[in-house]
Image 1 (cartoon, rainbow, N blue to C red):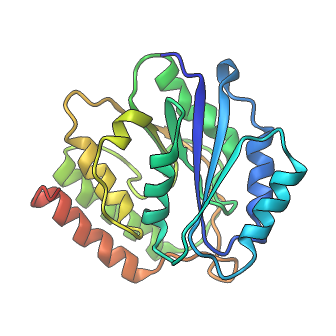
Image 2: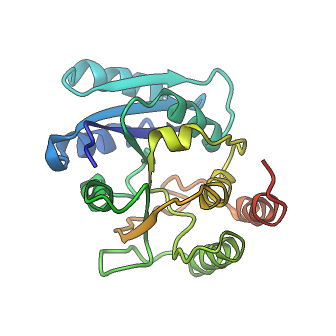
Length: 241
């Protein structure tokens, strides 16, 4: 599979303190086969100066292809991803959080199954391999495993980490799927819907995880976990469109 450009979708909400750091990491990555990088930032109506931080970075780094979009009202992470996916022009796209929990150096690990002609979709699993993982919340880990187990029951996949941020998609494929969840329900919805694509080839690779505490800016909570279970049933059990 020949890939000329990778679109990197960054949903951002109140990430003024760290977004320049993740952009530095993305800038430093050399992708396999000299693949071009297209960075798409979607500011979901941040209350801090995320916008100013992005404009300052763009001005200081004109060689980085950064496309910036802004929601005038806060719609949620899923809605920001919908906007970014629609704007992507690369043959493939990957989702990247604006914080520092995931390492862009591992883009190439996700790209390899695609470049070698095996995959259409690649998930980065925090629960596979020997890569570094920050030790944080026991119940979050249990919740993630329960959600993945429930998702697998309906999708008939054997994923180890459905809730991971790092998901690499064929752009035309993901743009052809109607996605409706506006918050963290994006993960179970997209997983259930891609699992029903005829002859879809889904792979998983181990990745690192440098998790944040709530004091450091982590946003997902128990209510989002409940919503995720609901979405698994909605899009899995009832095949909701």
